[in-house]
Length: 50
Image 1 (cartoon, rainbow, N blue to C red):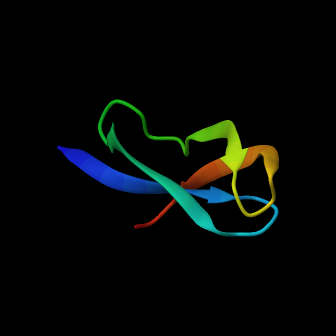
Image 2: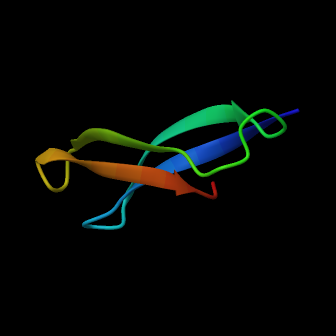
């Protein structure tokens, strides 16, 4: 029921965080502003495959 997802930085394209989501309840891609250690700033992180 729940799928593992990774959060990928939009600037440097590195996968920094992992999480899970319910595939049936939320069908759209998830995006959140998180801290990227490679960029050393808060950037937009979008959902990517693990």
